[in-house]
Image 1: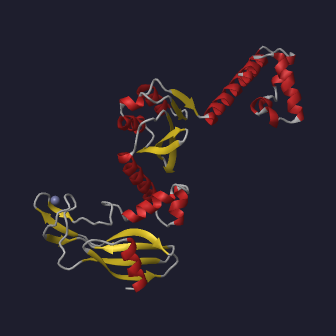
Image 2 (image 1 turned 180 degrees about the vertical axis):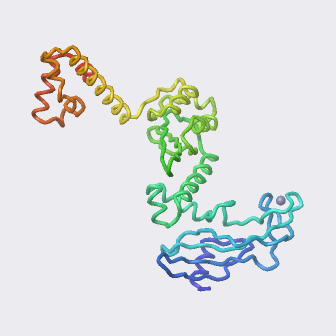
Image 3 (image 1 turned 60 degrees about the vertical axis):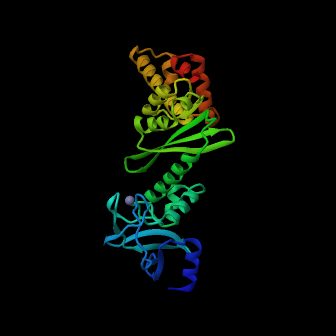
Amino acid sequence: MHLVLKTLLHHVERLQGFGYESSRLIEGRVPRIEIQLRARERSRGACSHCHKPAPGYDRLTERQFQFVPLWGIPTYFRYAPRRVRCREHRIVVEHLPWALGKRPLTASFAWFLASSAKMLSWQDVSRTFKTSWESVFRSVEMAVDWGRARMDLTGITAAGVDEIHWRKGRFLTLVYQINEGMKRLLFVAENREETSLRKFFLWLGPKRSAQIRFICSDMWQPYLNVIAERAPQALNILDRYHIAATMNKAIDEVRAKEAREVRARNRLSKSSLVLKHSRWCLLKRVENLTARQTVKLKELLVCNLRTVRAYLL
Ligand SMILES: [Zn+2]
């Protein structure tokens, strides 16, 4: 094994009871570095539950664990875990100090991804460091769990709920604290069901939930339901984009209905002529209107139809 690599690894990731045996660079379209680990001679494996050393039982097939890229090259640890016979926990896989349970990535890499995700989008992180989106998400989740267990939860009076779409038809629910001077991710839950957001409130507890004064969310009904149920005292501030979209739709419906009514009455009055072709001057922002549309809007407002009232709203 290259001395440089060995020195570097011992410096950044010293593993108790394990050693770095060999490494190789596999060239290709996406080159990769593979580092073979081995258990130190005469060192017994430890039970993955209680971490106590236990006699060996057998060996499983080799697994790979993605490590922090070295010189930008995707890097993997390879190791065939032993199973041990723990007095208390019976036959279990040994404790692997670099791993995160069954996840295919090392703890170091997960922390590396989670800290990169503070600066880049999750998509960018997965692309840049050549790993899956799911690995990035799991790493952020790990960091959030870690932080949550140690976090000071006093003074959360403003929260924001957001959803992200990450795989076809699959969503995550994210809850942030958005107080002045204290903005942070508090909670990640899978899906965007009522239960997803309810998990957040269960974790926060009724006392702290009662202290929330403002919650921002979009108009997704399950969120609205859970906010009303778990934090009825909070003012639910709705996302401006959704309000604008709903408002535009309502104006359009009123306009179409009114135009129909006018036509039905077959009154070729000024109103019906005015309403025709008025759609865009009602839906556009005032400052974006063309000169002709501005004139049209003026005419419309003079008529004081229901459409006009809807527009003014
Ligand atoms: Zn044990």
